[in-house]
Amino acid sequence: MKPTRLGATIALTSLIAVAGLAGCSSSSESDGDALTIYSGRSESLVGPLIEKFTQETGIQTEVRYGGSAEMSAQIAEEGSNTPAEVFFSQDAGALGALENIDALAPLPASVATTVPAAYRSEDWTGISGRARTIVYDPAKFASPPKSVFDLTDPKYKGEVGIAPTNASFQSFVTGMRATSGDATTEEWLKGIMANDPQIFDNNLRIVESVDAGTTGLGLVNHYYWYITAREKGGAENVKVAQEFTKPGDPGSLVNVAGAALTANNATNAEATQFIEYLLSTSSQEYFATETFEYPLIPGLDGPAGSPPLSSVGTPPIELNDLSDLAGTQALMREAGMLA
Image: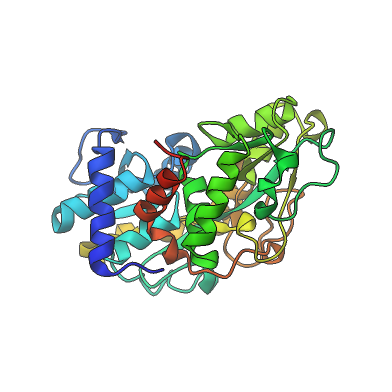
């Protein structure tokens, strides 16, 4: 399913047209001496870590925050004139889209093989990992489904929470396309819609609704359960549980947040230093304890109580295959899941 170079360009052009690039914001006025980072990760999640990078290295940064797809599209539109020196993406697909049009520089040797091969490419490296899970209300469903394909069963009618506009949900659907094909994916999307799902605008609202008993189960990223538990003062104070689906199922897709140098920054020492910093032990531990994601460098544990990343049965796909967001959105519209 990997797009051709022409297809990748069309996909990014479509994202520019849809997004309008209006949602981008900057943390500071432009500073020619600062390292310019385009971040698809929110400031609330990674701002403290970037500030710590400046404190420890003395390297000043200018960070422009926005959605990963929008940031990717902006870099593509700006081409060799982009001020971005580093792209820090929430999603592998946005990085893959840029790699497909040669908008990224090859990874420097110092970070080229730091994380396992499944979580990097020639031009970008994964920084932290997240798994898709099914959260559920044990009072309603003592035995949760082991596959997302089970969710079209009539016994779950009106009980499934989804967030169709969420980038992680769309990446999950793209992963299903890569492993099961477009026909099967479209059939599943239509089956979910026929089962009267509950629609949310983000993952956290799904977990909160399941915890409140309003929704029976939902599709989310694993760390939202941890965020909910922290907000409620501990795991003992939440009713919602979560389940990893069976090995190879699209419901256990492991996607990554990742980083790359833009094409004209192959020898940019400060940009390279920033990526090295994200892959340092202290930063990787930050992701495990503060954002509840999986560290990707070997030897570090994930968030407390989570299964080892190596035991999560992610489907056998290359993360660059998640780049065809436009194709996924078209399929979702055909199924009536997107306007």
